[in-house]
Image 1 (cartoon, helix red, strand yellow):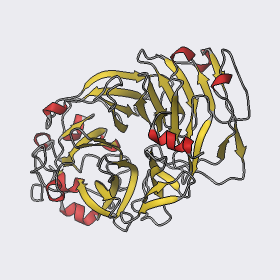
Image 2: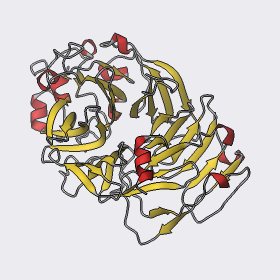
Image 3: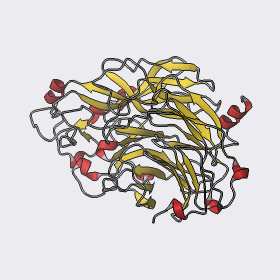
Image 4: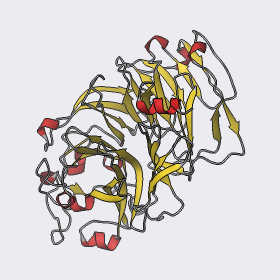
Length: 459
């Protein structure tokens, strides 16, 4: 399948003007394995077009770096709204399908990287402060977890996870209990790693999860991957064992052959989380392992550090893992080549409810979005997920960032990290495209949602 905008029914180009002297929206330019890149201009939407101006064969040409293409208007979900930001940007905007901006949040700090619309119209996000440990500031680093008001005011923040040995990065998630789940890199000294049977040439940044109580401003739960490692290289060192028969453990030596090993301690590069409220599980996308790890959130802090307890009886060991069985020295099921955004379809009214959408970046200049049916009732298990739908296109490729969401009309919205947003039907036809430029993710919202209503009520 392929889609070409030149053959579409009509194209609308909406107004975005350059401000050549404006501040940069992101930090340093890095390689394709990292999740930050430089954006050199500020973009301001000038309230260009609205739905009434979308007519067949309309073609409005303006000075612009962003375009919207209506490729098949009959299949476009016109009532959907897009919450979007540049990777590492300093603004977030909520726009309709024709480019009319309902609201813009102007940010004091660069995104690093994720953000979420709250029911009161505020934004929960992770941001890049000035004081971070350079040994932990890999692509996608953040540091400060904040709630931002409609006017850009910082209404709440938590900085205690940004210190000499820890750094929040990539993703945050508001839990149903009001707490916030944060991804964190923790530093392991190389000499200590070697003592544990973990090969390294530099200090290692391993993945952890921390849960923050926003009322008490304290940490109430955590999970650390180092508590669940296994190694098969040094029989006289700890946690020695057979990798394949201990697939609930994590092989810290898996990425020794990664091109950046020895140059960076970022040996895992997790980049996204999603929470399954029904089963109290956390899904963690681990890019350098081309996997998703599933973690039991029902455990206590003590249980999460060992291999007993919790709803699944194995403590903090992996309840399930999928995407790349090579990570536990098996070739039974290889699906992903680098992955982003493990997104559960949680709306019972949407096609695929209970399934997961995930973006596989790929390595042959083509990316794929997968919809997977997961064997949740069988956890813990190594049973591969079922691929129930997938989409790829010769023009769809991003080596980093990206994700996918399901709309109410059952179209799938794909955030291509170096381009913008695609809206694709279940038949694989492209309905709509938004050339936004460097894009972390795109979240789909609707006018009847409390967060959107709060925005409109306060305009």
